[in-house]
Amino acid sequence: MKELRCVAKKEIMDNIRNKWIIFSSGILVLLLLTSLFLMPSLKYCADFKEAISQLAKLVSPIVPIIALILGYASIAREIESGTMEALVAMPISRREIIAGKFLGLLAVLVISISISFGVSAMVIAFSRTMENFSYFFLFMLYTILLGSSFLALSFFFSSLLRKRSSALILAIFIWFFFNLIMPLIQTGLLLEVGMKGALAGKIPDWFYALDFLNPLSMYTSLVDMLAGSAKNLPSFYTPYSLVAVFLIWILLFFLLTVLKFERTDI
Amino acid sequence: MTSEKSAISVSNLTKRYGNLLAVDGIHFKVQRGRIFGFLGPNGAGKTTTIKAILGLIKVDEGEIEINGMNIKENGKEAKRSIGYLPERISFYDNLTALQNLSFYAELKGSTNEECKALLEEIGLGQVMNKKVRKFSRGMIQRLGIARSLLGDPDILILDEPSTGLDPEGSLLVKEKLRSLNGKGCTIFLSSHILAEVQAICSDVIIINKGKLVAEGRIEDLSRKLEIKPKITISLDEKPPENILNELSNMQGIYKVEGKGSLIEVTCEPEVKVDVLIHLKKSGLKIKDFETRTPSLEKIFMKCIKEGS
Ligand SMILES: Nc1ncnc2c1ncn2[C@@H]1O[C@H](COP(=O)(O)OP(=O)(O)OP(=O)(O)O)[C@@H](O)[C@H]1O
Ligand SMILES: [Mg+2]
Image 1: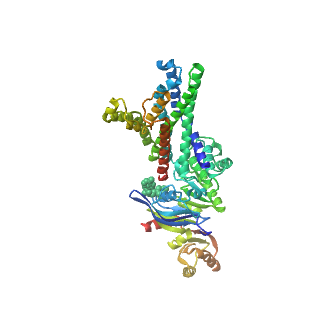
Image 2: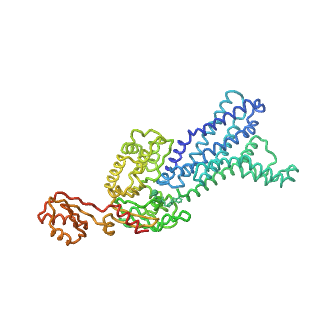
């Protein structure tokens, strides 16, 4: 336990001042604020409940980037540079190393999202009246879930590679895959196979189940549910099930990383 | 388990990298309290063996015990007593020397004060708050040595400890190793600098192409390989023939050569003194003498040639 905390602490120290993390968190704040103050549909909107669906569209590409920056090379980099060798030679189990690193990165992610959202919330609170601030808080929690799932994913991929350069290419691919390719596949499938149901005004259940494979779709759905704009959903598709699937995602990729790392030659 | 269990025991260690057999069924034991030199040509499998001892790589076959604890089953506990200097030393570039060392110290259960003292001792006192990114090769090597000494390890495993060190640094390390060994620390070091190994190690293990080719105390190996010590005695006059003949007939003497007022005698280590006594008794004046122990280089070359 002491070992785990020690690794997590080092990971936080090593990453918290990462200029890319600061930069992308800044972008996040900028996006949240400019849209709330400049976008016509949001400028006069007085209720967070109505605003968050649109805000989520802006947040959803950025947060995975923060998570990918944190995770993509976190293991590969240490193996490549040689610091992993010294670490594994210390009296610490490999499981503790992985758990400590993951918790440390998770902490940095949570800190950076919370600060971005916190700053935005404060600016809003001082400059205009908005109702339903609690929705903003839930929105932030969902965003943290989104970030964590991408962190777990990139953390796992970083354990498969030994070189930072290949890890970077893989991270870019992951971003494209979930942001662009998956949605295309989903829509394509719906058009191909589910057309009849869709035409009849009811999207088939399996189409919703596909969402469980993409954290970004889950995130959009969660936010839509929060905003009250999601209709005619199958019974298995609730905020609870979505949050549970998020947690399964995070846990699954974390465990896969542990399994992989225990078998890796350093 | 007995009370005289070895510090490190390696049995039938085998490691393949694809088709390459990097380590091929190696057995050896490192007794407590000794200094072992681990030798072999480039690519012999030294680093691979060392990594296996620390559980850094999965081995294909074989068992490794540290103080009687199996490294696979009880790795965390076993590693508590080991200080390790990797072949490729690296630190977290963004953190200072002290921050780096404190991180490892916490894992080893030692204090920040100990870190500072070690940094002073190893000659990095002035730069302990500098980021490691700005360190030179030798400074990183020194920091690596400091890291390996954290928490007073009973076993030190060093993979080429003097690479990149200046003469002062390597002297410092040599003295530190001797003094630690004096306090009972077992040392296992790989090195290509045979003179250094000869100066500090009591035992050597030599491997070649993944196979063990020799193991034992340096004197025992030289005896076994019939590499004899030589003494050169300088007298104040040319010695008479009969004395040279008497010497040649003594037990344990292989070769006697007279070169003017010098005599060169190749003999067993134990009879070196007898040679001197005999000359003294024969009424000759010994001006000076020099004994040369067989060089580790000779042992090494002979083992490597015979092995292949
Ligand atoms: N990660 C690896 N992947 C593939 N082959 C490897 C790997 N590490 C080492 N080898 C091979 O295993 C053999 C033994 O290498 P090792 O590093 O143990 O040698 P060494 O005795 O330490 O050599 P040196 O004196 O140069 O340090 C070499 O042929 C090397 O090419
Ligand atoms: Mg080596």
